[in-house]
Image (cartoon, rainbow, N blue to C red):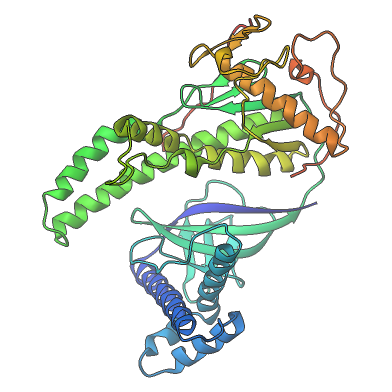
Length: 424
């Protein structure tokens, strides 16, 4: 099977290379914004939207124009990649996956991409990019496979290169039991076998320090040298928070995907769950402060990124990945199937009002998620193994029965520790 994988490294460019990369990033931002302005103008004038080929013709005119002669210094394919980004943004908008494309601002997600002619010298820790030459990078691991493209980006004052490769790998054979995962705030991830991963809360750990420097920046004159220094410090803190969270999520998702042949998760709408409760002037919201704190805690977990990593890593391991509807997963008794809000007596305790089954509410949710995921696979004709008889819950596969082999269907290090609690 073919595997596409990206490897990201921090660059160590010279001063001249930094100036060129800033120039390329600014030129790509200009091309993107000018093309977007052209599309909006054509729409207001009742004209048809230009496709990618039509925008490429416009880019050639801009490069040859006397108004923008500096665009000729930009690599032609790099400018075309900016137009491809705009075309992809329009496609996502028309398909309902994203909002309408927005103009890019200076200093926000500055990046550019080389689609070919990229060379990597892993032995000497350097990469060759068109019009930039050889750039040194922090060589932390090998780059296997054939290089497809390279994306250069600026983040918190540092330049990074993401090298996309493709290679042929043998199809993996999954091993281990099936598992359902219930994500939360008190427990980041609770598994159906009663183990759980404690939350990291990366933002909460740096919140006071971040607020201190934000207050300092607020007292400085906007645009001054000291204001820029304070802003750079805040960017470094945000980068630290993101890096620690990313490290934690990668370790957690890798641990789970390598040790389980089938993984079932909830289809959570994080954007809807973290919406503001402030309301309007006519209809102000209630418990706004409490909801604001809850939203902050939800976004600090990174549930969406965790699900994305679980999905592709499970596919790499050859396992099954299933997404189920989250309705009443923590209110349904896994023994008798009784559904009631009274079953969940508190945030952590589950006590069935019908049969008296008692367990941690998150464990119950994970068991029900696994049960729904197993049923969904059976409906699709996938074999998930035989469930052991005599188990107390309907999700009998959660007791650790292994599933048969199958294909996937659909710095501050943070240690990931699996905690075990007693099963009631």
